[in-house]
Image (cartoon, rainbow, N blue to C red; front, side, top):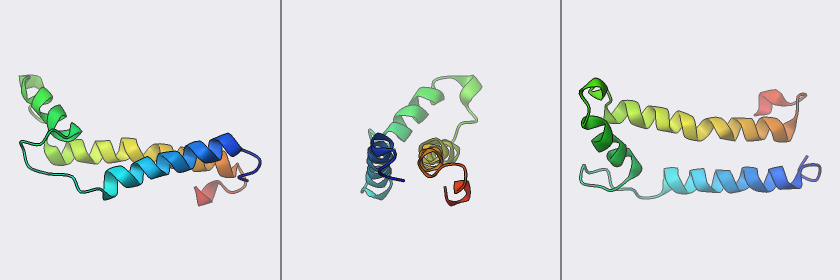
Length: 86
């Protein structure tokens, strides 16, 4: 599996490393933070049409956007026969 797709294996595990760094690292959660979530919330708060955007909703969709590629990478790496492992 890893020998058949060496570049895909490196990309997959590099992406897993980035996801681990983002999710397991100590990030400040206060409103004055310069993290991406708070910058996006400040951006959306400028517009009345986007007043429905909240911290928890934005964080949920950012987690989905971050973890879906992990499943796709493993699906490509493992192939059709072992798709359920991905």
